[in-house]
Length: 417
Image 1: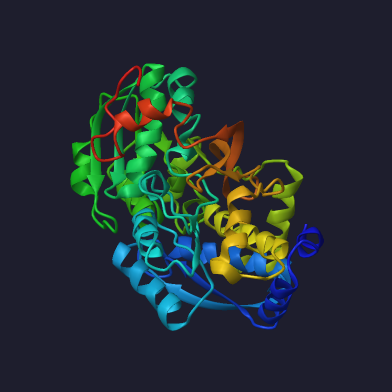
Image 2: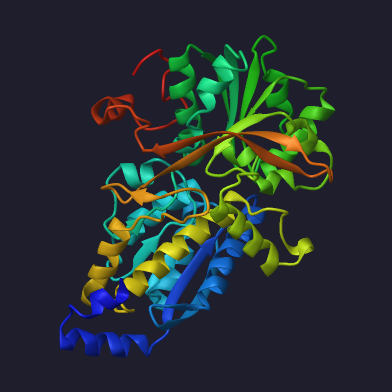
């Protein structure tokens, strides 16, 4: 593709490209390397490093120079970090962030920095690309609602869970997760009796655990990182034994590989998300091996988390388009962004990815169940693959918009939308 492109551009553009290729490509990397989601950010960075290793630290004939900035999952921290790498370090491209509300904040910030292309790391709030999207913000991962595809129908029709209560962290990504779960579960015939919300970074879940209803068939857990581990520890200490349903980051490798025995409560728990540890697809197996080969066993998880996969995919999309434009980011990065808008990541490790008109991923989702492996580790076993999941979950766009934005109370639990 690169050769074809170069034969059609003007001599002046060729000269400009030659100059650009002589200069490093400056990339800012943002992830939650502080706070309750630190372990998630660390694996996102590993996925980014796997991509750089595969690329030989080059993209479009230009050496990659990386500036890393830490966030703590708060919007303010994401904007501060972005300002530093964009306005002080003068990066060409920013890859990040990780957490949902950070993504909304960076979408807005990106509109003030048209000279920089923003490629999402793995943040998954629906609003980021659904409401007033930014022309220079691209998301190659599905949002939290899309990651719920298949789960609601499965737990109602296969597990027989007719009533559930939900617990979730009180911010945009988990609103989006519960939104997607509720849409499918309620349409299947299920009832959500109670919704509990806790601040991100909660240490004491005692009052929430005491308030959980005992007359529901299961409890949906929309927690991640330190919050997920803290809840599991305290729930087991309180003698909790309800059926559990896992939100995507509740059963991600970042929790399944945490220290202690609390995680064993997740064995047999159904969930869904953008990957499955035991998928036999060769692209996934190749990525897992590259991840394992690059890091010593005590410096990584047994298998890459979805954070690693998301950052890897965004970085590889960037590199593919840098190759297509021959490293030339002139004219406001117009050709580069045209490529990002239209590229199809056929060889992505977690299934084919393409972007819609809002520069939002349409991708593959995986229905899974937590299992204990022969070596005592936990992983997500594949139950079903759901392809071509779009942001409206297959619902007509007008009807989908009428539901409202994900929040503590939206969507209502209805049999149709």
